[in-house]
Amino acid sequence: MARATKKQYAVIGMGRFGLSVATALSGMGFDVLAVDSDEQRTQEVSNVVTHAVTADSTEEEALRTLGIRNFDVVVVAIGEDIQASILTTLILKDIGGPLIVVKAQNELHGKVLNKIGADKVIFPERDMGLRVAHHLTSPNILDYIELSEEYSIVELRATRTMLGQNLKELNIRAKFGCNVMAIKQGSKMNISPSASDRLVDGDILVIVGEKNDLKKLELAYSES
Ligand code: ATP
Image 1 (spheres, helix red, strand yellow):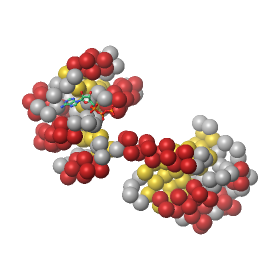
Image 2 (tube, protein in one colour; image 1 turned 30 degrees about the vertical axis):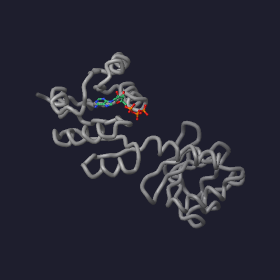
Image 3 (cartoon, helix red, strand yellow; image 1 turned 90 degrees about the vertical axis):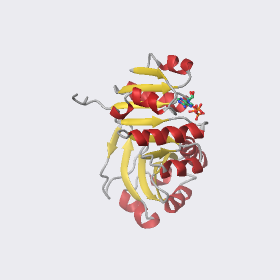
Image 4 (tube, protein in one colour; image 1 turned 60 degrees about the vertical axis):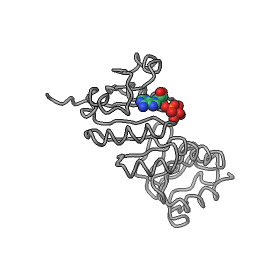
């Protein structure tokens, strides 16, 4: 059978996170299979996604029957029942095929998921908590994205002291060891800013760097 060109996604677990992923993917025009062991949950999502099926993902036969191996990506969004999340991941790994993305409830859960071969482990609550905390402590930090244990990206609103200066004068690289990757102004995005680019009101700098260096930068610009 010819493989469809449009990516096929399956989302297992229709809690708040799973529902949000499934709804967003569907909104982007992708085919989405939503799976939940609770019939009420599958019914609630049935008019949002392509297919909604009531099934227990810890039963291998159920997943095989759904043809899960033909999907491109499977998102396991079972949170509270860690055992079910791990079992589901193991079965998916055994069946093979799709990229397996799993939501972890805590660090230990995440470690187990990595060990058993999940392709990507995500921590939505932890990551969102980080982003909110950074924004609350430095209101000029509009977003904070963790790239790895060492590196992050921040979106910093140009402070009053920055206005009128160009990137060379700001000297962020020499002062903090961080790189300005882009400058956003409304819907426009300058993705290769040059040393002579002068900052104007409303500019947002997208900066990548080591976490400690970014922390120093955040502190330096926290008040203006
Ligand atoms: P959120 O915080 O995103 O709302 P959560 O992390 O608290 O969700 P749960 O509510 O524990 O996640 O689970 C999400 C969904 O997963 C629930 O709707 C639940 O019915 C479903 N679920 C749990 N176990 C299974 C399973 N074995 N097979 C299929 N679905 C399951």
